Amino acid sequence: MKIKFHGHACFTLESDGKKILIDPFLSGNPLAKIKEDQVDVDAILLTHGHGDHLGDALSIAKRTRALIIAPFELAMYCQSKGAEVHPMHIGGSHQFEFGKVKLTPAWHGSAVIEGSSIQYAGNPCGFLITMDEKTVYHAGDTGLFGDMELIGRLNKLDAALLPIGDNFVMGIDDAVEAVKMLNPQLVVPMHYNTFDVIKQDPEIFKEKVSQVGFKCEILGIEEEINI
Ligand code: NI
Ligand code: MN
Image (cartoon, rainbow, N blue to C red; front, side, top):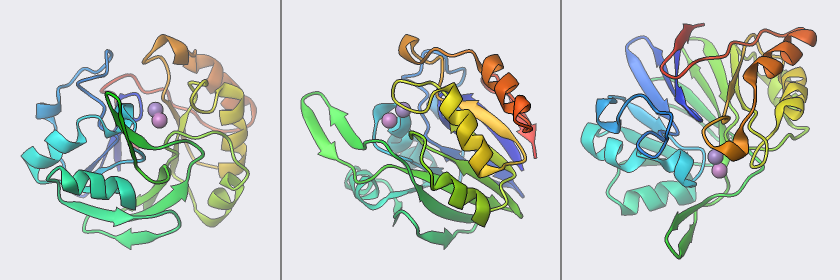
């Protein structure tokens, strides 16, 4: 499986000719290197409704006819805007053509905020994505929680994509605790340096992850790795 980082919490996972995109925040991301009209995918997975995750999902979905997979309330919002959707919720899994998706809890908020209107978007989530026998955990936006131990015990994680930016999500030290519970083959940091308030040095994270016996790979924007 190929994992490509597009900045912030946005990744493409590609396996066996199938491609999925997670949290496509491109046009609003000052660090993004590609435009939303350069993306072609089979499905778009959304962890929650905040602008830095919903991002360009609707325009990409309309242009490419990609299916949007999201927690129920957020999926209904996207459907009301003309997208084709598959609603799910925390704890549920579903086998798609590209692979299997299971929604995990995430301790965060979720709403679509446009000017003074705030639309409830259900609970935020993380994703366990299995394509071609490889399983990747994308934690979404979340604080540290003890049930990550359960996620690590019940799933053999080939990679864990974890936020380290602090302020809105886990900071470096909490993310290292998450790694210990998740027990993944590989850790990739995300959700840092996009804005000043989430500025972090990923090299410090990498060092701390290796000190507790795990492998960490820092991906530059538009960089990819094979797992
Ligand atoms: Ni958020
Ligand atoms: Mn966020």
